[in-house]
Image 1: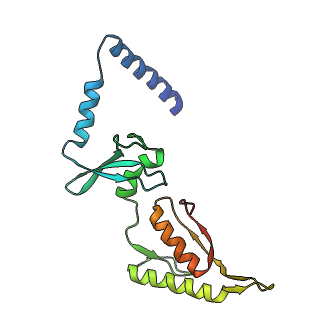
Image 2: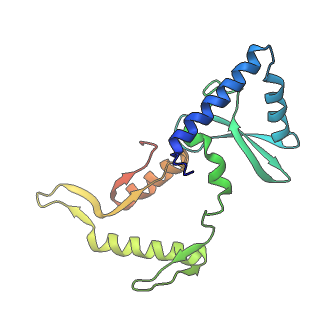
Image 3: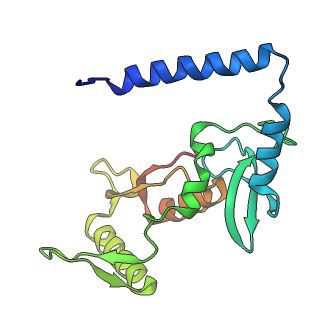
Length: 192
C-alpha cells in the first residue's frame, strides 16, 4: 500500500484531530490553564530575569532576558511594559537567535581578492583596513564644489548601510561620523 500524503494534507488531518481532542477535553470541564502555567514556570524556574529592550526598531519594546549561570535560556516580552504589554513582533520574538545562534560568526574573516579561502583577522587589523579603504576612497572621490561653485563637501563613492539591530544611539553617532566625512548615502532603520 503506497500512501502519498502531502505535508499540507498531513497537517490538516493532524490539526483536526488535535483540535477535536482538545475541544472534547475542555467541553468535559477540564481546564488546561494549570498545565500551561506549570509548563511556563518550569521553562524559567531557576532563571534570573533581567529587563532589557528589543534592538530591532525605534519602538523599544521591553523584554525579559532569562539567564541561568550567565547563559541566556529565554527572551520574551515584558508584560509590565506599557508599549508592548508582553507581546513582541516576529522579529522581536526571534531575539533569542540573535544571541545564541550557533551559525553566528564570532571572528573577523577576510578573503583576499582572488583567494579561495578565508583568513582569520584580529579586530584591530580589520578596523584598520576598513579605515584605510574609506580614507583612500574619500580622498580619491571627494568633491568640494560643484561646477557652478556651490559648496558641497561630499563623496558619493562610499555608502553606509546600518542594520535593524543597531540602536538609535549608535545610528545617531554613525550619522554624525559619516556626514562629517562627507558621505551622503547613509541608510539605517533609525530614519535619522
